[in-house]
Length: 203
Image (cartoon, rainbow, N blue to C red; front, top):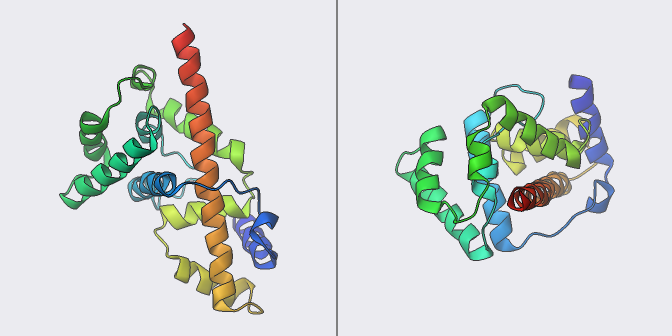
């Protein structure tokens, strides 16, 4: 595990530009805020578990499908507001579902899935976008599950792997990974959920 992490940081240190790390699909501001809100919630709920792969599970499909950009803004606002008044974990999700549940979702499908199935679903989605030794995967996962700041990760990159770069250059590289991570998670999940929703509608 340590060897994979070292290799990821070393690859990041040598990356001359964002495109070197992967193909980037730009998110709209509302899409970016939405996926960040979901990732931050996942990280706060599952952070520090030491799991090798992402396994956030049920919250994703329940909140991901059937929403316009305006509704995505509402999701972000509602999640933030519920956290501010003390809701966390499953209670937060239950309350968010009561407020935000769309008229056509994958709720029936997800409602019948167990935790193991949800975890397998999320792992499959993430690994469709990243190999396990991808620096984008490693840095993105650490950023959300360990609640690290870009500045702290940049200092670590600068100190341990890239003393030849400035701290700003290191921060740029960490930011590239997070942007790529957010984009891949958003589009991979959205495409997969739309596909499954279409299959269910045809039945």
